[in-house]
Image (cartoon, rainbow, N blue to C red):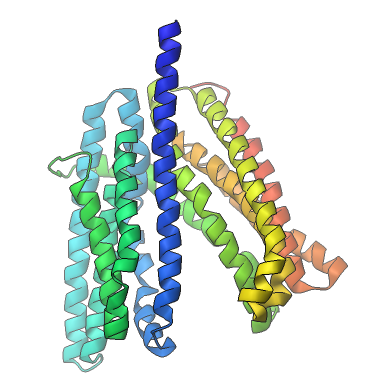
Length: 426
């Protein structure tokens, strides 16, 4: 018994070390991206940067074509490994690899053909055609990168991911001279080099070196699991943009601008829970596959949520206290948005917990609650914003208060549906 406890303690310490390395390197990568981004913007003209980003803005929509296969693998691989059925897990991995690789290269070829036709017919000039090919090809490559990322499920694999993220962090600064010397085309080369390096790193350190093989049956199973996850994750993310949408529809550009720092701070703050969720989700799926015990997932998630809540609340309070001193120095044009930023921070605190519950429900394939939870979130945001506006007559303040109360009540919604997965224990 004593030896068993010691062994469990050693494993826990080792896992904690790996988790710290992965999350820490992820936060370092995020910081490097933000700082390098501010540096390169000093050397780029807004108009030229806007030309390139007018192509990249559409790139994210390419991932819809995966039909959720990568999301499905993200859940299915650790689940079947935990269940002990390595063969089935590998079959799904091989099918996902085949599908995403064919899709990615097919998109690159199709995009090149379309850009060539547009150039030959004088719809695009050469620069526009090249930008289109590079932007969409980089997006197509990201489909493969995301697939490879879904195969890193074990602690050993997360240790490798930490190294990759550290190298990418250094590369953000090492490649900056490209932008300084070659301006826009240097910036394009900068972004492509980062995307290719990330793909190469994932490919080189990939934990499963298997030949991809297509199976219609396995593809259907991956889509059946992955598409609901992809769909509800997308809607959940879109519902977070409602406060800004309200300002666009019923306010004016000044209010939208004053809300921007609050959105940026909130997004930066959520990097920590984002990396924590990426680490914990495969753990949940593995545990559920191993024991088929929803109660265990419930207890595991509640424990993690309590720790995460206190960490995020502490961080939120610290940020709220220092913002009034930081804005006048670094963002003097946005001082009227100080109170708004302080309030919106706490919507991020509760959203981080909600994201954890969301992933836990995904791990046990409990998708039905999402249609209620996400609809309720929209109702909460609209309702609390209207209520706050009734008392304050200040739209900017109202959407901020509405965002916080919406996430608080959304936490209650998640808890209500989440506790229902415990019984019956399947």
